[in-house]
Length: 367
Length: 154
Image 1 (cartoon, each protein chain N blue to C red):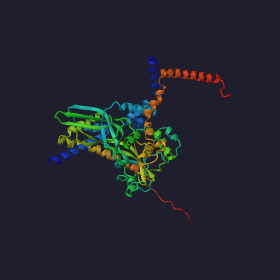
Image 2 (image 1 turned 60 degrees about the vertical axis):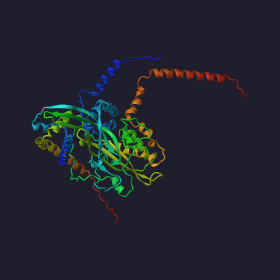
Image 3 (image 1 turned 180 degrees about the horizontal axis):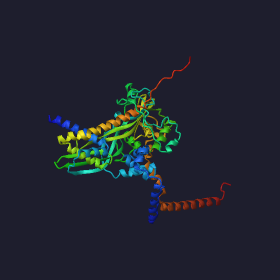
Image 4 (image 1 turned 90 degrees about the vertical axis):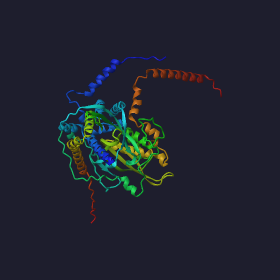
């Protein structure tokens, strides 16, 4: 018999009221504004947009504030919000070659055309806590220098001139995969896999990428190029009959270049892994590129020996909203399930005891 | 002949809508107020907010793939003279979408078109270009100048 129980409404109501109070904290401290979060916690907003899979800085800031800074909760809020909106259509593919570059580095070529531009990076800082940030001190305007506006050449194009690197990457299907519209199926085409990775959990992909560097599916990666900057979003508007620019978004692109010894399927050459993420999210873009490359094992005829190469394992567990939903549902009432388990364990234990007792009382036949 | 005129008109409209969509809603509103007009218009659709699925290309230039979505707002208006204007822009700024649609409709009149281009579109393009050039020079200042260390063996 299944018995439904009710109750807890008042407790829940009061818990949420308490949450609102704790979220606000000490009332003598000014409340955070969304502008402050957008401007001063910009990379938190970037992560929430990337994994929430919705580009909207103000919404990301609101989600962060509402989640008290719990980024996975904020990502969850953004994902829930996106389900309430109609889909207008698909953009034209963004052209990262025409990016307004704010950072562009290569670990493979020192003197590449366009140069190494560090941009606003944490690299080369000493990671010493800066007490001056505890106060609101005046910050200097950035240094400026005349720059040229010729688009920065892709590192992959340099290697392509010598024929030493594979092409950008094609997919067999005419239709572009979209896992927000069709349920996941394995094996998965590379386009759909990249979509899953782009919204995947940064920590999970980082750990898997790291595992490939430590020898679990070793893929000899080099950061061929990382670029961060703004790209135009173009969209074909049916009412107009032509495409217009809808605005700009900042993205991080990572082109990982991997040495490859060749297999029955492909000659020795440099292969590639690709990462493309909202905002300034370098770690995520690099991890995504490492995972993309590792997941191409079957396509390139490599042995599948490590977790990072296992498509179903990686893609099924990369989404932190799904993961948190299933892990955290364990704390919801399971009273009836547990009652059934309790009965089962009692019965098994009783049988176990009975069996042991019967064995103990058996005459020792052999002697 | 008609074909080339259509093409030129398309290109002008495309440029205008792109420049307006790329601008900040507050800047458009400020310039709009300077225009000093208040045309009667009827909302045919919206302003309504939805999502645009964003695409990139594998490796930068290969097969397209979806890498996320962005909020976008669109509007369609009809002026008293029957002209229809459309807009679509990233973000959730409804007033911006409405203003762009009105400007799109107004610009179908040649005299209004040059006024809008001069007083709204060109200033917006100029401030975007200025912002880009500022950012470019800030980035350029972080460019690495490599130099070779000479080892003092002698």
